[in-house]
Each structure stands twice: as structure tokens, then as C-alpha cells.
Length: 116
Image 1 (cartoon, rainbow, N blue to C red):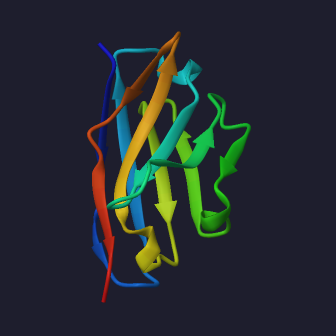
Image 2 (tube, one colour):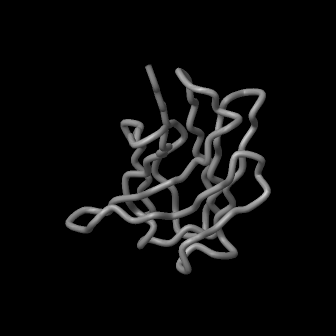
């Protein structure tokens, strides 16, 4: 079955960096677009970044452009989110997501807290 497992979250000071990873299994990763979402306390889940199966196209929500980079390693079945210049408003649980057919699959999430 499809499994997505995020890791790499933690506590970081403003201006710091983190790299999130999402390890995928149970489907043909190299043919799947992948996305990162986040959900802050009391807010709706929002799309952060998306990458196509061949890494040819990446898209970002406006608030993270120039600071975050989504990438993938199809040999390792893993998608990454490099987050630089972190701000307190980036604090959230970060999730990876993929779609197979008519179904969406989510990981369990990893907490990112940006605070001094």
C-alpha cells in the first residue's frame, strides 16, 4: 500500500534552515508528482510546493518563493523540501502528498517550529 513518511522537522531559530524528507513506498514513485503541504494551528492546510515526476516543473506558494526548494531523488523514492531563511510564520506541521488515480495519500506529518 502507499506509504509516505516525513522526517527532518524540529525547532529552529528565525533565519535558520531545515531540510524535510518524505520517503515513499507502495507505488511507482518516479511517475508521480509530489507535493508538500503545511498546516499551522487554527489554520487550513495549504499547498507549499509541488514537483513533477521528472523534476521538470516546480511550483511554490508565494510566501515561500526564494526561500524553499522542492526536489526529489527518484532512485531513493524520496522528495525533499529545503527550507532556508525560516520565519516564525513558517511554523506548522508539514505533510507530503501524492495522488494515485482518484485517491490522495498523505504522510503523518513532521512538526516545524521557528522560534527564538
